[in-house]
Structures are given as C-alpha cells and as structure tokens.
Image 1 (cartoon, rainbow over the protein chains, first blue to last red):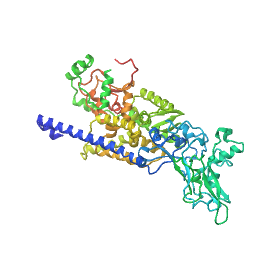
Image 2 (cartoon, rainbow over the protein chains, first blue to last red):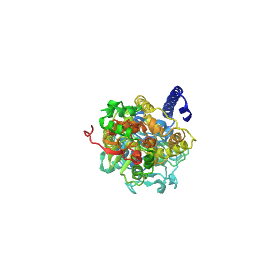
Image 3 (cartoon, rainbow over the protein chains, first blue to last red):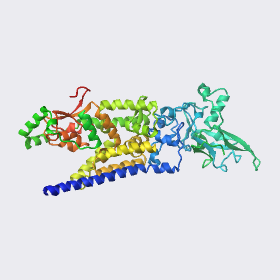
Image 4 (cartoon, chains in turn orange, purple):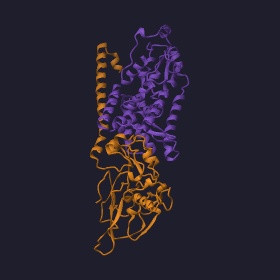
Length: 276
Length: 321
C-alpha cells in the first residue's frame, strides 16, 4: 500500500484496477467454494445409505427434508428421549430428527404424539392423532436363527442387561413414567418380548379388556401388529415365529427389547411391506 | 423513500454514493461549510481519543445474546420449558416463533405453509420490525459473538503485519441469497441450513456438540487468517433477510453531523462500515441521518463515538422528514 501511494497517478489507477480485479476473482472463488461445500450435502441424501427411522407422522422423506426447520422441538417433548438430531454427515438432513430404535425406541408413552403436536412446520403431519395411525417403518425378523422363540427358548433376566439405558412404559408399575428396562426382570417360558412389549399389541389387549388407554376408544388399534405363530420344531419343543402384521407402525420397541445380540427383529425405516 | 432505496442498494452490495451538492440540505451544508472554515485541531482529536472508553452497548448486547441462548439451553436441559426449540424455530411460553430465514427456506423448499409456521413467522417479523432487523445478528446470533472474538485475533495479526485482510465484493451476499433461494425452490432441500453456523451453533448449544462444529471452526479460522468477518459480511442470507426487515424498522442508529470530528474510528470497528459512509467529511446529506438497514444495531460505534454523534433512536413512522 505505502509503495503504491508514491507511484504516479496512472500507475495508481492501474493498481486500483488490479486490486478490484483480484477482489472480483476472489469473490467468484468464495461464491463457488461456499455453494460447492453446501452442495456436498446432497451426497448423503442421494446415496441414502442409512435410511433414518423418523418420528411418528413424518412425511415422505423428500417432503420431510424439505419441510423440517431443524429446531428439535420434537426432541424436547419426547418423554422417553427417543428422538435425536442428525449431524452434518447427513448432509441436507442436518438437524433433522430420527430415532435409533435399538438404544431407545418410541414407545408412545405420551399417547398423544407430542412430537407431532410440537412440530412447527407440519414435517410430522398433524393429520394423525393416535399411535396406530403412524407408519414409521415396518418390523422384520431379520435374523430368524437368533430368535429365541424360533428356537423354542425362554428368556430369564434383564432383556438388555443391567447397564442398558433405555426406558419403556410398564403400565402395571407407572402409567405415566417410563421405567428403565434395566430394572425389569423377565421370566418367560418362551420368549415373546417383541409381542409382549409391542405398544400396539398392549393397546389392543387393553381395549379388548374394555379399558382403552385414557378411556378413549379411538386409541384402539384396528389391526394387530405382531403375533407369534406356532412352527413345527424338529427338536420337539414348542417353537414360535414372530409374525409382523399389517398393524405394525415401526416404532421399534421390538428391536429395542429383543434380548439377542444383535437383535433378531429390526425395524426397516420407511418400509411399508408385508411381513416376512 | 430515498432511505429505503439506498438501504436496499447497500444491502445488495452497492457502494455508498457521494452526494452531489444539490442533495445536501441547507442545514447540513451550513455545518459542512462551518467545519471547512474551522478544521478540528490535532490536539482536539487527541483529546477525543483520550476520553474514557465505554462498552455500555457492547456489554448489554453480549449479556442479551448470552442470556437468550442460555435460556434456550436451560429450557431444555433443566426442563424449564420457557423457550423450547432452537434459533431456527421455537416456542416462547407455548407461543410459536420461527426464524425468518429458516422459515423462508422451508417455505421455498416445501411449498406448503402450515398455520403454526405463519404464526411463528409473523410473530418474529413484528418483533424484529420493532427491534431493528439485523439486530438479530448482533444481539442474538451465537456465531456473531464467536466471530467478534476471533475478529480481535484477526485484527491483532493484521496490526503485527503477520497477515493481510483479503476483502471480497459485498455483492456476493446477494448472489448467495438468490442461489440459496433458487436451490431451495428447485431441489426441495433447505440447502443453506446444511452450512448455517447459526443453526449449527444453536443446536450444538442446546442438544450437544457434533461434527458440524468443525465447519463453524473452519469459518472462524477463515475469518482469522484470511478475511475479516467474511461470513457475516459476504455470505450470510440470514443477515440479508433481517436486513430487509431493518429497511422499514423504526429502530435505527442515527448520525448527528454537527459535533462529529470525522476522525473515522467508528468505521474501523464496524462490521458493515459502508453504513457509516455518511460520517466521512462532506457526505452527510442532513444534519441528522439514519444509518442504512445493513446496520446490525450492535452499538459499537455508539459506544465509541467521543462526540455522541451516533445514537440509538426509535423513530415512529411519520416522524421522518
């Protein structure tokens, strides 16, 4: 700068022109760079290697990504803290809510779909009011060889060990406060945990007993979500196969509670298909 | 009307225009003329610089910024439920609020607007209409605060001649604004949110840190070593959106010509020095001029001005000449 000042007028003007030219080029570089980096966010979306399990009521993935304002209000209202926000590795999906069912599934402890009510943009559609109306995904017996029921085995102990952090609603203990799974000891002759803890099945049984949740008959699921079907066991003892039914909403409780490692039954996000 | 047009031109990246003589009102002309005849002495400037430094507005602003962001964090972490959500959208005591730029991106990408979003956007629009538009940037945005701190490092490095500040054309922000709007419309993704340090920082504070913070770190390093306050000055569409609101906001920083010594310190601390162009000798068109809408109402110049020539003023509509 100080050198430029001593130069005669013409040179000074040239220098100023050169400076402006460089600034212009730099600006082009900055613009291309920042937009390019933002564009990288498309890669994870296009590749969609991991299909996220979205909270109840989520619109179709493309619409969901378009409409989510990434505020996390759904995270804040969830009583079992099932919802997490995606990081920058999700690209355009940064800050969008998802559920990782294995450590903590959505068990509809809130009954009223609090996350749906909290959503300010309708990403979680306000058109649904009850758990059975959602379709987050679909359960699938991914590892039948692991399934205790398939092997005709019972289950005794803590479903996921005593260090497990996840919580579930156990109506008989406290209807309003979800209890740690790690404090709940099971003793089952034949493992039926996936069906036993299924929030849809629990509601169905309550309705059949004439006690629908909150006394609201609308809470009653019209269709069954999972059943255990007898299968012929070559070894001679009663073995059963979990069969996922049309009423499955994909909440992920079966995946969370499944005591085998890895889980025999898993949720396929966004899947709407028939049972396997 | 002039104010609106010039404010918008500056927001879009135009350089401030030197006024021709006919544009300068007689009152201002008189002062310019007087000042020409009675130039300030070096001793006077020195005396001005020796006046005690105040940080009244800066302190108030930092406290507000920290308080609001802390309120978000505590509302969730301590389950106070007063201010739920993040800066992109939230609920204050149950009432919807939505960041104008985030809401805009969602509307463009999704092309459907639900009632809650209309309520939230309108609330925030009215709020910042009253409070000055880009005051969001300096009084609320957590990235602004970090950038202010790293700016000090940048300025130190420059003063030691270790680095040189590289400037960009401010028109870049307009290009970004249009490109991000088009990308939202065409792709249906809120592309800008992926790299918005405001959203990333707000969520990191409330929900815990993530890898996205690396991007914020890269931006801050860029601002330290390459270009002073580059993100806020040349890129951020959030600032642009709130800038539009500021065009019609009655909350402004005003410049009073008569006592100004034109020593130019205000422009040195300013994030958007083009709005302080009026403080250059012979540039003010009136004895009192409102700073353009790109002004973030941060108050650094108000604190710094030794002659009280820059002030916060709330001008009701109609009071304008």
